[in-house]
Amino acid sequence: MLLALGSHEYDVTHRALVMGILNRTPDSFFDGGQYFGFDDFLRKADQLVDEGADFLDVGGVKAAPGPEVTLAEELERVVPAVDALRTRFDLPISVDTFRAEVFDACCVAGADVGNDIAGFADPAFLEVAERHGASVVACHVRLAPRVPDPEPRYPQGVVSAVVEFLRERAARAHAAGIPRERIMVDAGLDLGKTEPMSAELLRRSDALVELGHPVFLSASNKPFLGSLTGTEVTDRRVASAAAHALGIGLGCRILRAHDVRGSRRIADTMAAILEAR
Image (cartoon, rainbow, N blue to C red; front, side, top):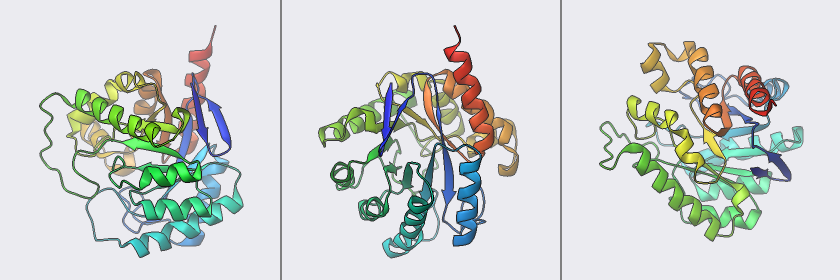
């Protein structure tokens, strides 16, 4: 299976890529805004690349409910960040946004990927991707980003609901002119799911693989792992590593990670196991 990100092409038949998370938010659930300052952000980016990140993901608005972030504020947070990363590194750059205007401005600044947790709810998002030759992540969310969803229900079962949603969104992206090798799918763990639902989706990652697109795993330090293991957000490194190893074994090929060094080792070890003859 091939994955194309910008001018880079990867064979992800057995080898998973590691995406390093870069938050330009003052209220990140994991780092609490530790890298919101621009110099701190760049130092963190250098660290993630040194630790083996294959590409970087810049986000200016957290997915969970919180204070409003205007379009102007999000642009101010992420566009200069993408521009600086493009100057600094020869790596694919992703922008974590659900706004087509932000995605467009970031593509102009040098972004290669639109990581849209809204599942292309903005109809212009895919047009932007096609126009810039960018790759996209189709992510499942039940309601919308930043909207509380305390009692999610899936009458047909969460796995079936997520698979059908992603099948339709991936087809929509392909119909918009985006090549299949530039379309990734993400179950959206903890986005409109209870902790048991997220665990079930992780266990059934193979169902997403059957869609024929590289599967994107965003489990790093997520609340469902904390609930399952009784750990606080600062103590979920081992739980995240276990989720990554399981996900790779079931076919996931992109790890969105806070701990890039550990995730790189897991990805390389799993590739050696899967490729061994």
